[in-house]
Length: 80
Image (cartoon, rainbow, N blue to C red; front, side, top):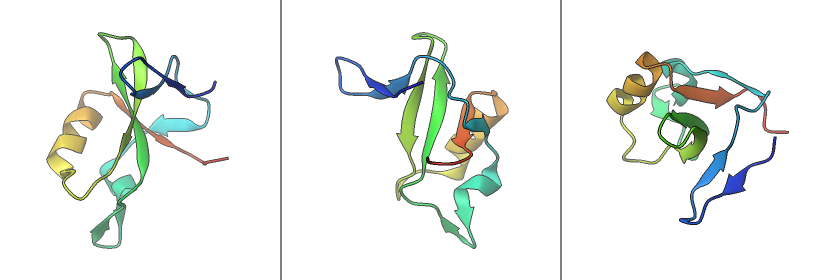
């Protein structure tokens, strides 16, 4: 499944790629630091797609945890 871009410029996948799995908070940490630049997916039940998100300096663990707890967050198992 290839990444697509919608008319607003948001990157998404129409279905969950095979090289993903449900994410956990530890996936977003490298030592005591956030993995800035790490890409992950969040499911949108409104659009029925998986949006590509990127960890930024302002990304909070609380926000990530909300998506994890809702079962809507996925991480890539490899980037090939």
